[in-house]
Length: 489
Ligand SMILES: [Zn+2]
Image (cartoon, rainbow, N blue to C red; front, side, top):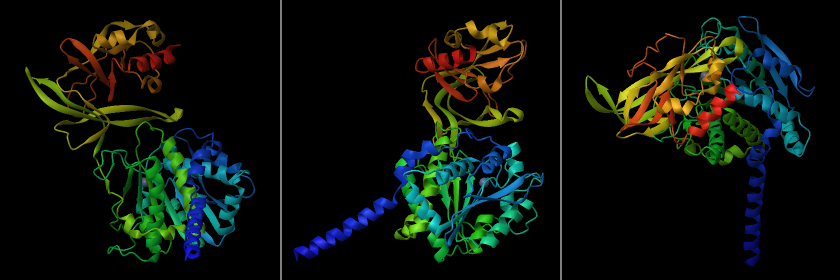
């Protein structure tokens, strides 16, 4: 009797061990920095940046040119491994959705390394053949836009196949007859995960292959693998994971690739507070993709149920804003009204510099209690006014070096007139609007406009909003001075 109990215990201890061993995600998470591809630092990298990396991959990787985009940029596959299970991953079908591409570059470095993880690597490469197509839409990436050079959304071209980029993806899928497919995207940063007041930072879908949304064995496998990835992500970004609606879209690649017999998984990288360049989400992609390879190689995705997939909350569109000022007092025609003011930002590219600046706008005024925000501030009882322009103009950008920014802000000054050039991208962090002498900002506190605002209780100005960003003049004083000083010293 005792012996049998002991044996049962030993048996379970073994299972426990085996599971622990395959759950290498914590190791991958901890070791990530040493594999991070250092030449890619933010989201606006281009085709040339990627091909430079592919050119330097060691011989274990087979890099093959699959064809060219409309404007003649190469689209390449990177193959490694000798296993019977074929895994195809494609990223950046939409040019302005680069998060996963960054992670693929890191995974190449991980697979090239020679260190403590050799056994893990060899296991993966013995059991799997990994085929990556990073940056499927290089023309879109060049301009940091969604569509290709023809203006076609590649993800609506799976049937008609008029784009060379779509044709390339279809050809490689058919040629491989891949067992697994990872369709890697970025999504709108204003989506929330269910009714949680948290952004959907990663969203998944095991796309349907017909209008009835049937779940066959393969689609079920994709759902189970998603459950595994969701469990990992819940440890690092709890409640920030969403699930896409699985309505069948007959023109989309994910849906068709599922239909053509590849277990397909859509991963969408969304917004996450304090991660504007998505470098943390890049790291999490590295972790979940490598963990997925492990799950596929060893089959442990099978231990999950498709039921759990349906517990992941739906991705909900449009519930987030960048800033909400709650319950401020706004004046119109001599009367004061209590309103919430919501703002959203847009990025404007500076093409040559691979850089951008932000422009905000008021997207809603009124009762915004059903919305959430990256910066959500309750300002009950504060009156909101438009910021003022400083009385003197400055002869150059450098002439501002001696100014105390906090002094100006406390007087309600948010606009500075400066002669000559202003480095817009860098000045973006500052709570000021820079104007040419005599120029007017032209904005008032109205829907669709981008006013600088001051928030006042009694006669004290305690906070400002400039270009959609909220600054508390007490708490953020040091931060404001610091970004001011780094610009001028
Ligand atoms: Zn996309």
